[in-house]
Length: 62
Length: 465
Image 1 (cartoon, chains in turn green, brown):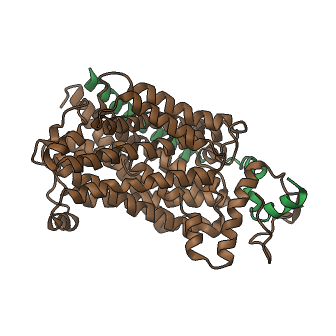
Image 2: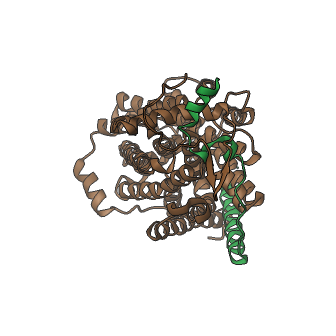
Image 3: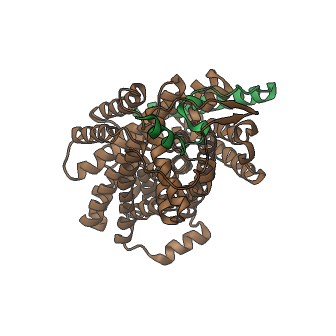
C-alpha cells in the first residue's frame, strides 16, 4: 500500500480506533472495599447456584 | 481496494491526534485498520450524501445478529416446550418482557463497544484486573461450550426429521464455521450470517400454518393468562430457560466486540439502537412463533414429547399439525442452530483473543489472528464431537444450557453496568439514571429466577422437599 493510499484510508478512522491505540491497555479502576466485597458475594452466589444446577442435571442423567 | 477520494473534509481528521494538548503521532496502519477504514469510508459517504437507508443498511448487524443468534436451537426448543406444556397464555407477554430486557442490556453493549472501540472481555480484564477478566471469560467459555452442544443438538433434531444422521449435523456445523471465517473481513462474515438469520422467520411461518386463534393470542397478550399450573419446578425451569433464551453472557461479549470490530463510533449510536431494537422485535416475533407452533401440541400430550431422548418436536408436530408444519419447524431448528453456532463461536473467539491480548478481529487474516480463528473453530469442533455420543439427553441439554446461562448472567451484567457508568471510559455517553434503574432491576430479577430454579431443583434432587 502506498503512502497516499494509507493517508486516504486513515481519514475514515477515529484516532482511538486504530489497532495501535486499542491495544494499549486502559487504566485499571481502583475498586473500593465495598465494591470488591459485593463482587465477591455475587461471584460466590453464582458459583453456588451453578453447582446446584449442574448437580441436578448430572443427577437426572444417572 | 482503495476507496476513491471524497470531496470535502472527512468526519474526523485523525492525521495528528491531540491528547491533553500534546500532539501525538498517528499509530501505524495495520491491515485490520485498513479493512475497517474501507467500511467506514462507505458509512461516511452514505452519511455525507444523506442516503439514510444505505446508512442504516451499512450500520445494522451486531444487534440483529445478537438477538436472532439468541433465538437459537435451545431457545426455540424452550419456547416450543413452554407452548406444548402450558399453552401460550403466560409466555407470550413473558417473551416480550424478556426481549425488552435484552434490548436494554444489548444497547449498553453496543454503546460501550462504539465509544471505547474495545470488546467486553478486554475492558473487564484491563479495567477490573486479570482475576475478574478471566472469571468472566471462564463463565463465557463454559456456557458457550454447553450452548454450542445444544446448537448442534438442534441441528441434529432438525436433520433427523429428514432422516439424516448426527454425523451430518456435526459436519454441517463445523463446515459452516470454517466457510464463514475464510474471508478475512468482518463485513463479509456479518452479511453471510445476517443472510442466514432471515430464515429464523420460519418459526413465524410454522406458527401461522398451525392456524392459531388470534383472539387467544390477544387475550394472552393483554392478560398474561391462563397462568401455568402443574409442577412448580417445571415452571421454574421453563421461566429460567426462557430468560436464558433472550439474555445471555455470550450476547454481551458478542455485541460489544462486534460493534468495535465493525468500527462503530459514537456518531453511529442512533443507528446502533435501531439495530438492537429491530433485532429484539424480530427475535421476539420469531420466538413467539416457536411458542405458538409448540402450543399446537398442548392438549395432545405435548408435555411428554418423546423421541431423540425427548426432543422430537418436528415428529410430534407432524402427527398433530401435518407434514408441512413439521418440515418448516425442522428447517427452522437447523437455521437457528446454524446461526447460533456462528455467533457463539465468534463470541468465544473474541473473548479468548481479548483476554490473551492477541489479534481478535474478523478483519485479520487467519495467519495474523490464529488464536481468534482457532478458538472459533475449536469450540465448534468440541461441541460437534460431543453430540456424536449415542443416547445423549438432548432436550435436557438444550434446556439446561439456557438455565446455566441465566444463572451466570448476573455477574456479566454487573460488569457491563459498571463499564457503561464509567465516566473515564464513556465520557458523556454513560448510562442515564433511568437506564441504571432498569438495568439493576433486570439483574435482580434474573438472579432471583436463576436462584429459584437452582435451589428448588437441588432440594428436590437431594430429597429435602
